[in-house]
Amino acid sequence: MNGNIKLILLLFFLICLQESLFSQEQKRPNIILIMTDDQGYGDLGFTGNPHVKTTVLDRFAEESICFDNFYVSPVCAPTRSSLMTGRFSLRTGVRDTYNGGAIMASSEITIAEMLKDAGYTTGIFGKWHLGDNYPSRPVDQGFDESVYHLSGGMGQVGDITTWFRGDSSYFDPVLWHNGTQQAYSGYCTDIFTDEALRFINANKEKPFFCYLAYNAPHTPLQVPEKYYKMYQDIDPSTGFENDDRPFPSMSEKNKEDARKVYAMISNIDDNLGKLLSRLDELQLSDNTVVIFMTDNGPQQPRYIAGMRGRKGSVYRGGVRVPFFMHHPRFAEAKHINATTAHIDILPTIAEMCNIPLPQDRTIDGKSLQPLIESSNTDWPERSLFFYWTRRYPELYNNMALQKGKYKLVGITSFDAKTSDFELFNIEADQYEQINIMAENAELAAALKSEMDSMYRELIASEHILHQPLIEIGNPNENPVILNRNDADGERGIWAQEAVFGKWNVKVNKGTYSVRIKFIQPVEAGGTLLLENNGIVYRKEIGENTDLIVLNDVVLPDSEGELIPTYLVKDKKIFPFWVEMEKLD
Image (tube, rainbow, N blue to C red):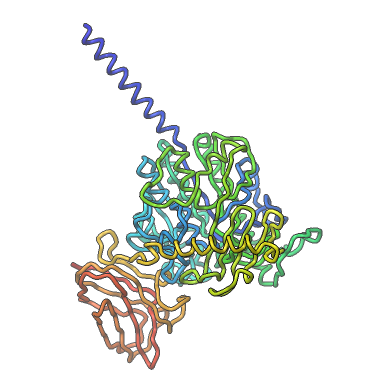
């Protein structure tokens, strides 16, 4: 009898333990991270814009924790890599938005990988922009479900399925579903929202991470007509007559661009209304953390709350963005003024979900949880390093270090003196109009020394010295389509024909079929050269064509450059894309 009682007690204990563990799992919040593309700090009614209609976002901000001094990188791919990893972008291998500089190393640990290992189901819908081929795609970097476009944007040269659509590239697109092309109907923002809603509905019974990364309002500025009509008669440069903050000069084109941007943002706003309503319907709102942010400042001149600079600039207009978090455990809305950044998101999510941070690498960010929990938290002074120029950071050119209330800005040459920099007290001069260098030379010298140290450390990062390679002939992606966004070579490879380009690749030995596509038909009588690590395949082309096929291309194991070139009449033409399929 005693044995039976012991057995019953043991079974009861095990059941209670299982229920306790299940309960703990259920208490882990769902995470929804929403990021828009090129929506500046001023592109919200909440931040003082009198024109743009953002009813949902304004209400969401009013009910959320608002981080009023939140910073990102000047351009999108570096922001996205820091967001995903908690690390400055150069540590991850990301140094640009194209020219082969937007490929994140596969060894990086992303938010998705961290959460997936902890039992979350993970999904991305929209823009990835951290590598379009194995092993850097979303499906390779921790996402169970992915619906995304290639490269930096739809309608851009790297997004091979939408580039030729031109002015309709945002409508009825061919996207990539879990790494495979799939046709969709509708407007891109609506599609990404609907796919996210399907994902949430399918995973409502277990913890999920949903990364909803809209490509709007990035160029090309395409929007459904009903949204454009909301703004077609406004003058976006008016309404600021009694505002003493700096305001950019706007051409007629700038005004028309602003109308389209505002229309795209209102469409986003409606879609976020659908998302938040669905969370209520599914009774998920009380266990879901929802974050809204943007990736950098606006691309075009328009209202930006008086700040200096825009996308691409290290001034505040380029790097300060809205960041709102609705956290059900901390329902009271509040504003937080501490200096925070994109690198803080991964460590924050880790602490919220009770998941340990990676211990084998530098995590530059800090968890925001202490700031969320208490207004009295002692948030130590920190340094943020901003940089961006094409290909690689250029020392002191568009480079800044912000520490506490002081910010040192370099728009100068590599051998500049400290006096050639600008120094701002952004607490007293939030619009960065007053250079206080002359009376603070010693402080500026100390900040420049710290900038030098951070630059030297980051530019020597492993993945900058050894750039991430696209792998060819791996069964996880075969065939591989190499696009112009990830092409290295001359600076600024885009839609030019006569330009030198290449791809940095790892080749698995085998026999390949190679298809080489050009933007427009190349002239007959030329020669196609395909080079890889000293092996050159040559073919004479006897007809006008935009597609050249090479069969039985035998390549050994190698790491290096793949260089395709079409030579005709003293011209060297670089392909639009190259497809390589391993046959054996």
